[in-house]
Length: 460
Image 1 (cartoon, rainbow, N blue to C red):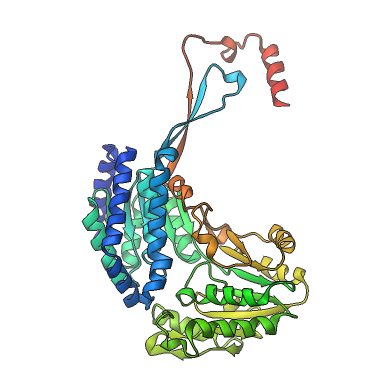
Image 2: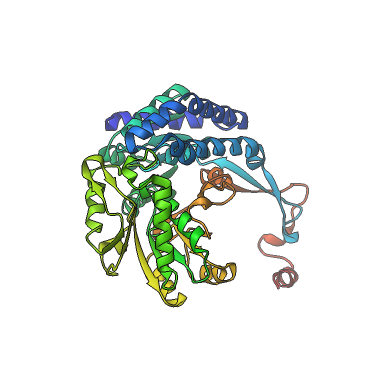
């Protein structure tokens, strides 16, 4: 696709939106149903494509990709009438007899750019919000998950008019061409580095952005934690999708009195989930490409391997790995790992652990294992996009909770109603009758001293 074709797609969607095709709630619901029908029709093909791209098992593909989108569609179908309704809001006494309303209207035409690690989930999930809000959308998946990308292109072309929703394939050059165009919203999921490029491009047109980025999400295990449960949940959170998850525990801080017990437990649970040789397990995915493999293999040289560390470059395989004795200034402690390698750092005092976390940029997720009382104190001292107490990752699965980052880990929220709002403009409306026209607001401001006295009293 060249620049002329991209401009044509943008123009066609602008005209489609201006004709008001997407405004009715009934139209939006019909399109959500079409998307659901397409997913159900192609479910087996989707699991095959995800296996081909990343060797995700059908079970993991369904749980972490397909079911998430299907549940989001159902939630929007159930609640869209209420979300889209114009609401009456209070009007202060000094503005009466005017009435106040809050209207919700679609922003217009959205560009949605998604990564390779959850190629279906992270493209279709925000699309649900765009459809629900009444927007048109251009979808741009990652070329690194080529099989899934090709299937999604087929699904979108079968289900939707390209003037309404279209999917554009291609590499970095196509991203650049798309970002040069003016959009009403850019929704980007990916790295902080590329997120800066997206925000810079959006700033040229004053386009709002939702940036779902990543970072180094810490996991703290306190002295009073249930080490057996913590070990199981951390082992799962670190190895789902072979650690290629933006909210995966990135490094582990454990009280020195529980370190051995915790790491021994994690080893047991790695082996209970994937066997003694995870390479033979059909439930253990692979690393996406050689570039990622090279980066992760480099991390293995930066400390002492406690467990794992096996590599098969031809299979793009790295086993679940625990490491210790890692210098604080090493790349593995500065960069998001995005793989099945977990640095383990012991601490003596919680202030020590919090200090280490606070030195880094605010993460997308934060995990704490320990008492609720201690968790409350720790959460008040550490900021993050989201958090779990005595669990990992699962906050993402609750569509009642907003999902997003803070600072370097992102800006904006989605999931559930937040997805609808992300693609919407909340429009303030004041409706004033003409049967009365108080003179106080007009020059020469008659009876100003009485008006001021009244307003001062209301403001106290």
